[in-house]
Length: 215
Image (cartoon, rainbow, N blue to C red):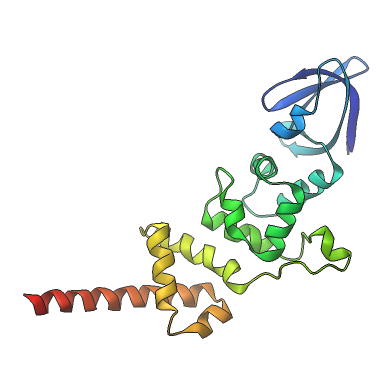
């Protein structure tokens, strides 16, 4: 495995750079932040992660070992490939990603282009326990993941796939659980979705009755 590259920066592009290693140019994909620290003609060092596919070998570069570690962990999430993992690092610092994953903050991941509520929910669900803020290791308490932060993005995603807007879906979930707080505490996505759909059906029936009464 290629852990890092150190050599003369031969070229810096919008999404990649070329590092000259004794006459051999190695192309490395990186975030805009990482690329902005490289200067053509000067020595540069990048920590790297090699992605091996049947038809290609692609290097991704990072300014710190921590960035590379977070990148590799993000790749463990189903449906998250190297390009999307790199996009997450382009929007958030590694520590911010650790905090969001640890606290179940799905909204932080929806700020990344290409990530909607469904994927964000999957990220916080599958990264639970895998990314821990550095302060936690030092004995500093980190925000605990709330049950709602884990299940709500998944329920919203399911409802938007059925045709509701994200705003209407969120509002309906909150209203349907007002009288059933135990469902929110348990966090069973399927049960909460069914409860919300039942509430919507009942609310629609109530609205129809009101219209009929006015008529």
